[in-house]
Length: 264
Image 1 (cartoon, rainbow, N blue to C red):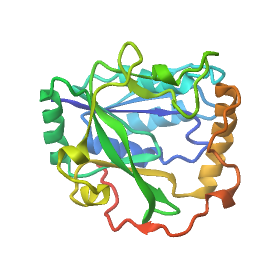
Image 2 (cartoon, rainbow, N blue to C red):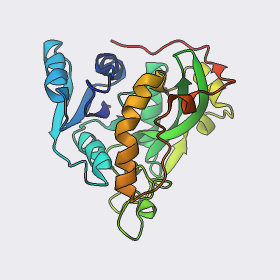
Image 3 (cartoon, one colour):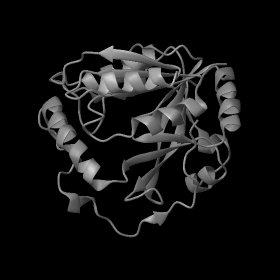
Image 4 (cartoon, rainbow, N blue to C red):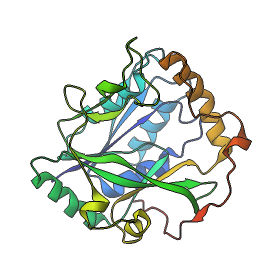
């Protein structure tokens, strides 16, 4: 069994993404990493390509030229990375995410997924770190782990009559089949007879750290791209990308009490 992790990058130097740490984390778990790098205002393609080559990392770089005027360009970049994968199991990760959990557990669970005829993917808990690496806001679920032969794009019910994405129904990168339907998915937490995602994470089963709100200055910088992008893409739908740092400040955060992620 071969595991591929796929991700995307654009303007990562300008937006202060720690691409080195992300790649080393992905390579700890995966046999290959496929990275689609879209055209950028900075040197994302050149810088990451050099880093990968200098370290002899097994990272496949896929240059893409999707227009940011295309409302569905984000999903198209993600799908380009996915289609470059050669693994039996594919795992989506963003550059502001890190994979966590025991690698042997991951391998066993992926083998079980391949043996299930009707299930195409696993819902995986994602802990949303907030303000720093040691506190979190909440724990959600996303379809990160899946079989090959699928696609990333807008789910069919997420496209409005005017042909634009509905912000509340699609981020244009859902895990879909050839007809843009969501695929049969099994929640890993329930499959392991657990009810509490925090307990699941502490048992060291596969999970995701989301780092997108660990540094508010970086978050605002990135939101200056995403807020107008989604407004234009959706034709004016309201979105959650605040440009005010005070809007991000919340109280009653919980301590993670977990180890940070592993890297090669």
